[in-house]
Length: 188
Length: 64
Image (cartoon, rainbow over all chains, first blue to last red; front, side, top):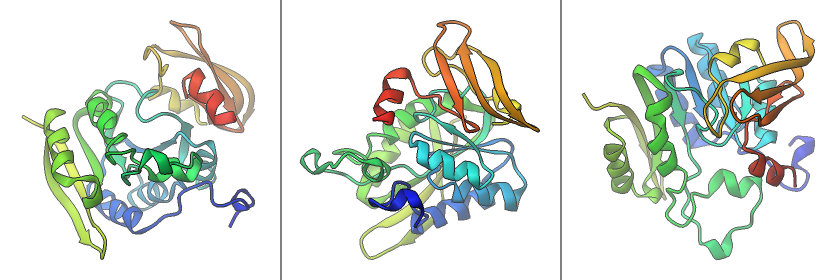
């Protein structure tokens, strides 16, 4: 617990989904890397240290950006891909907030924002996929974590609409969900 | 932030280039300063080494 955690944690802690994204990223990341929604910066730090790549981590939560920066990640406070240039990155990683959440039960704090994907579970995945092609350099790769709770087929439809082919990079089943990291490349 | 971050960031509103104005620097890290959009003029703060590139309406919401 950090001093910021006294009223409940304000930054998402690395969990099984983070571990799976790190596993895929250590395998597939190349060139200049962006991790969107970096949270504590744990995944970004591992890519930078174990692969020796330059990794930028962004999060809309300033407490998260602070933690990521303290781990040595190049951090920025940002909403998804908004402040990043066209063709800027060779690899973009994203473990999105994905839990479908009843609007009646939203409690509107940083941890909520780190977990909730809105009513569909896909409210951040949709704008991310619609914009990621812009920031990706030629030959670029996207690594996107998807939970079965979010609707795997629905996410694949969004991937296709955005002009990407997908392969399963890693997948693991847990009692309540299956987690998959998709590796996306532009459709030829 | 490192000055090399300028290679990958732009204004979140109109994607135009940003102008860096440094107030405080520590070796290669920029600790305090501003990033101003060369097109729309919106100014984004760099605080304690971290640029805040949220659009102004979200920045105010986050501060609350």
